[in-house]
Image 1 (cartoon, rainbow, N blue to C red):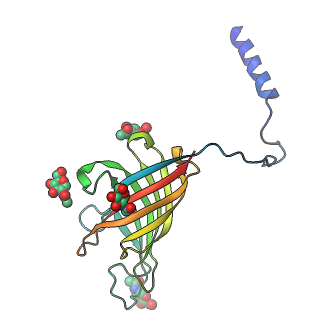
Image 2 (cartoon, helix red, strand yellow):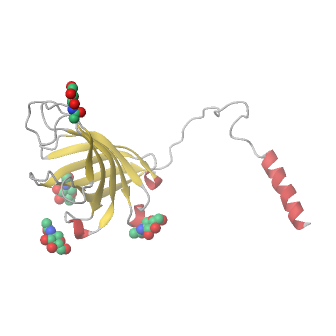
Image 3 (cartoon, rainbow, N blue to C red):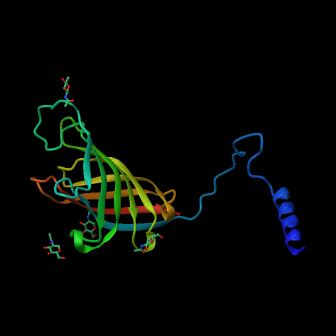
Length: 188
Ligand SMILES: *[C@@H]1O[C@H](CO)[C@@H](O)[C@H](O)[C@H]1NC(C)=O
Ligand SMILES: *[C@@H]1O[C@H](CO)[C@@H](O)[C@H](O)[C@H]1NC(C)=O
Ligand SMILES: *[C@@H]1O[C@H](CO)[C@@H](O)[C@H](O)[C@H]1NC(C)=O
Ligand SMILES: *[C@@H]1O[C@H](CO)[C@@H](O)[C@H](O)[C@H]1NC(C)=O
């Protein structure tokens, strides 16, 4: 009896609830957007782009079927998929805080420039399960680059910001690189 009353009450609630979508259309009326209060978080970490060795974290998935006469180690047109470890310190043994998953493409004809498309996800601490989305060119031969934080997931939903990137170390024989990153992230 009690259960039936509960079910009836539930049906009543469902039927009288204001439906957010008009059943004959796929959108709601547009309303003014009231942004929730924002906060800023500074992040500092290191990204390991490991191309050489037994366990590469960045692998070549496409390249042009010809070589342009330039002597860069990563020819224009090469595309790498990455699952790069992200750590507290420059040493890989300093502790994993997340991973940089996505792609980068060698996209400079005159000068070695990577265009980076990363979902940079955290697996440690307060932001475990959240990620920031990074997309920009990175001229790796220059001492410092700036990448745009164009969005985020989880606690970084609707994120905006920027990430300063510096090549902390690079090994010219393997092309492995360790990148230091300081990101300023504005999020809800
Ligand atoms: C590259 O392209 C040429 C034709 O332009 C073709 O003959 C050759 O087999 C291709 N090589 C590879 C590795 O696909
Ligand atoms: C990284 O740390 C390990 C020990 O934790 C040490 O043996 C190694 O030399 C360190 N590497 C660098 C580049 O500092
Ligand atoms: C991060 O979250 C996952 C999924 O909730 C959990 O399994 C894992 O233990 C967490 N890691 C840390 C270091 O808190
Ligand atoms: C990141 O911030 C630290 C501490 O302020 C600084 O030592 C380092 O040079 C910065 N790195 C980059 C790439 O901005």
